[in-house]
Length: 354
Image: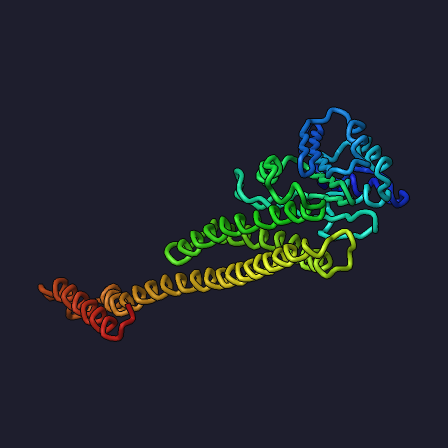
């Protein structure tokens, strides 16, 4: 049983809203970065204590609070108390096994996403949970460990001519979601290259290692499917106009995200079908290889049947067999054996049996 399961079982029987971290601790120390900006203002600073963020709560400027590491319950508890978040939201943030979803609390929106990475020593899919809380003039992003995909957004924020500086928090949320989903395409490209490599091995020289790789890729596709399919509902809800915090100008961009997630889902389904077919090809290839081996063995056995018959007759050593005392009987028998072999080989070749 893994640590995550143990922590989940320890929560059984506790009331809803109990704050217990479920998942793996990904960073040693929680890092908090605050960016406060407007059309003319821009402030970026690393925060030591979460209380330093609270003074920005009611500012007219936009405040982006990014938290890397969600295992310290005290920080989330103070954050929830200051901004008035529902205890169930804090509970969901701490549970890293959430499925992607969006919840509208009128004053703020809570969004859950999954970042996907592919690589490492094992070349496997890794999933990280990202929680985004969008208010009227603030956005709080929380993830298990730092994300490099946010760097480009921070760079754009520093440019005072960037559209982000004059847009609302809904547009910033769109950028965060878009960067996460765009990263899916990079992961799919790497997996596509891996599938192509495995496919070439499957045609030339399939082995048990090839089969294991195919099963690993199928499991990765299952994880990706589980993380991306619910996103259709999430993006659709943001785009339909049911949430007042999402402006009409931002919905146009969110509609583009919806198209992207459909492309991602289609690619995942295509890869899953390809991998299923590759397993069938592997099994057929192994069966054909076995048939080839059996065919060769059968041909060899068939060639030796008449030779064995001739040898068995003259191996009986009966007393009155006339050929035994004949001077040329031994070489004649060899000529007959070789002639039979040649005849059968020619016959099999004409029949295209090998």
